[in-house]
Length: 155
Picture 1 (cartoon, rainbow, N blue to C red):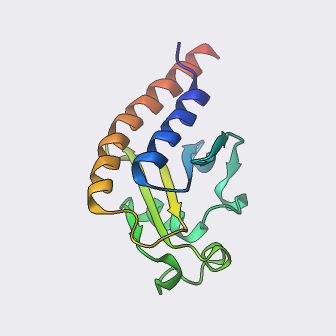
Picture 2 (tube, one colour):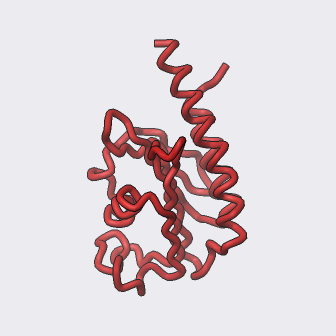
């Protein structure tokens, strides 16, 4: 049996560990709206309360919308010093260092966004780590869609 919440929690822990991130969030497209479905840190369980991206104070709004629009991975070695995003209130307040925001695509359609950060050091999200995450993300997209389909069938 597929449990959507358990899949999300496991997926996030695997992504955080493989990326070297401290925290992360999973944003999924639900009813044509970006919704935060999980907020996690490496040291505690994931918070699986759903929240509209616009109402979420724990992720940078401008980064999420940039990745939504471009559907390209955005990796910043030191986000607080990047001129294009340094004015984002979240980045200013948290003094965000390493940041990774990756689209989750299935058949070239955006189904979600993975957001990861590490505020302990700069340059955490290396090209080697990005390659591993891209492979994991391909499988995650399939798993998420299958689990979502299963949940709809159950309902």
